[in-house]
Length: 444
Image 1 (cartoon, rainbow, N blue to C red):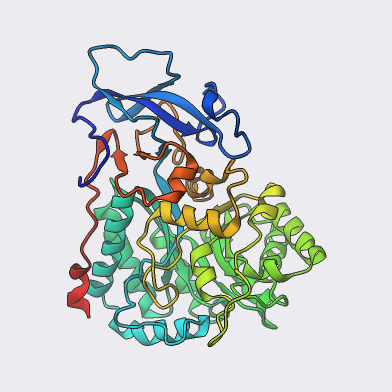
Image 2: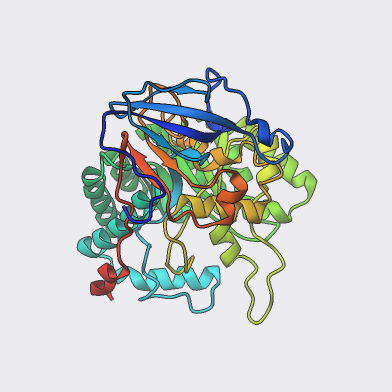
């Protein structure tokens, strides 16, 4: 537990004192007064000062500072540091992760990434995938993530290998990280004879049916078949949509229309949605009205989209490639942010760190005036989209899965790396030592 700013005792019953919690993490039943010193800046911060009682791995109570913890219980003074719930990262690609040393993107473009991954597939056997994917889980856990949804390349036999590796990891990590898997194919795959077997494979491993939607003359038929199979096997859906800056790309709208056409009652998530950022207000309004009616959740991947979109040789990018986060939220559509790729051809960087994702999203999407509800975009909101409503809040009666930061405000949180954060899982402080990249050398 290197460089943590406080030490949590190995006790069943203790108190975290003198901490601060963004009010968006608290349920309506928890009413605490705001921090008086920050009342001058209500447009920036909305924090409350708290003491948090932890007993037998569960948050027992949350009180304001006027409540004095009993003298016979250990007390950890956080020095006004922030308390967050653990992160929920609902759009990742663990199977691609950490292939960059072997298969870098030759030109930094989306097509360059796609070709590099396809060429790298021949390395993806059971042991190789297991090693890289578990490395990603070790990073995620050490940074404070408690739930992950990963997309898995699923063409042909690779799909079975990927899901079997995922299932092995899900068993190994079942008490540490909640794992979900989504099959990933281009939607044309759903019009082939292999589509039924793919849906059966996803159902066998309690996964989510998904794919990449591209504008083409058969898109309606492709989506109809995906929705038909999802209903047949009782599966939720998660699509990659409009990962481009072409204003003519509007697969998100087609997904929403298909959901309404099929009266789909399961959960639907659409990721990326970049082309919304370059479309006319009327086009955006029509699409988002359909998304709202179809009850589709949106997940944005700011770091990866910023990396890939509008990349041209020897030219500075003009567009961010990030979807309309504010406008989506204003229409009461649930919107989350996630990490996406990590050290692979689609994104050369990253470390499976939810805080880094939040910080990048704040800077790229201007989520700080005010911060308001945006801390929920890496916690309770993706948890709800994943069907895990018990995660992502700081609520009495729930598991004490918390992150304690030395940062006293959200401004301080975003300004520094917070490498001395304390991760508490089921009431116990965990070792936050990251795995060494040398663990991957055997693969390359």
